[in-house]
Amino acid sequence: MANHTKTFAADASLTQIAIAKKPRSEEKYLADIQIAGGFGGGTVTLFVSLDGGTNKVAMRNLSGTAYSTTVADVVPVSLVGGGDNDEPVIIYATVANATTPTLTIIVGDNT
Image (cartoon, rainbow, N blue to C red; front, side):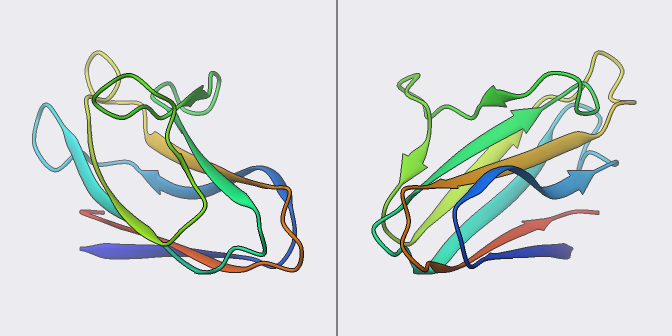
């Protein structure tokens, strides 16, 4: 298991926080994303790319709503990679409307 850590001390546009080149199994990429620290009134939104970063889409919860939070949270992730799993799964985050945030986002995965 590997941890990928990214800290945010200001608002940030789309920022890469982890790349997984090997899925845990032949079909899925599994990880947990921990978001912690001071939000400074801001919002963290998660995005994912299954095609090596060409297209980035909002990560969605089971009800289909784009995932964003203003409080500490742990997000379980289960994704199917590209058609033959050759493309890496890339996870991104944005931080918006924050005043001096002290956020840390950790992605714990199988790489």
